[in-house]
Image (cartoon, rainbow, N blue to C red; front, side, top):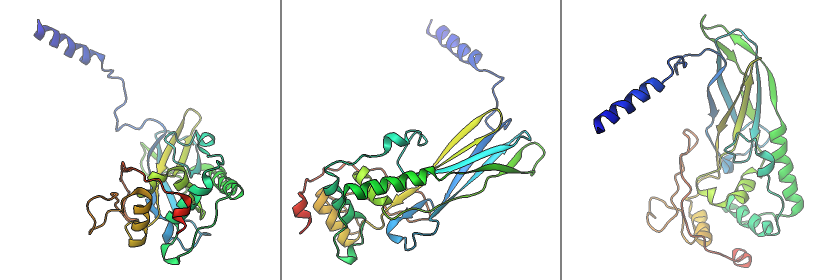
Length: 271
């Protein structure tokens, strides 16, 4: 009886497959084959010029038909897993404890060698940061892509590259929204929308925004004060916060560590 049931199940699975479905390698209409970020990781502390593009995105879009393809790029500075359709919900309104949190994050994302305290976080400054986040998101680049006739069967479209210029307080904003993400970096993303007269496709490409080398001696000591443990280094391998500085030549796949936060008062941090 068990063998008979197994045969019936197998037959059921076989008859349930639809032979009319397209093969994964077949391109019969509009499709985004890939989106690349260059560089895939940005170190905020390494940026010396804030008036030039810091990251660019390129896309490979194909279409089996000879239809015009519309495209639209925009940049989501927030960490979203919904292609930034939840942008308005992700904007953080001012809260009373942002003054203390801003001081902590200001120390984390700042330059330790300068030995200066960060600028105070005020509601006015915070609203200015929100305005810059919204400006990045609303700065769309749209148009109609030209056809590159490489093969008779499938046409490739020349989607112009998308260059993004960040602003100085972006790392600070992400730190205040996701403090534990500091060790692995944050994931802002580019959003590409392409469409013809029949369908529309949205693609999201994340880029890692990190501070710099959190394993430096001064920042390691700061993390010990905040989290109760320093960042792991070649010399410190136990009782530490794991972190891998992957550089700018590869994507970071680090996972935020589970750590117990040691609560420290605002006055303690000023000394």
